[in-house]
Image (cartoon, rainbow, N blue to C red):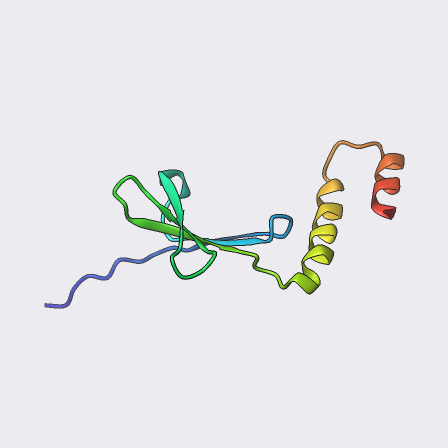
Length: 94
């Protein structure tokens, strides 16, 4: 008899400002604690049963481009804030 396979849904989150990339294969609201990996600067996220439910890759972008990506992300976020148009134009020019 064949085993019934469980489907796993992955959620990805890219944070260009914090320079992290997270992968969740369970509900992130189940997070109880996290711990650095023994082999890298990655963070492993666990639930209350000590089961890994996600991983966060630290320093995802190379140092040569991370500042450019962060600045571009900040500028795009600013467009959605309730800032007067004149002030927004000044902020985006910097």
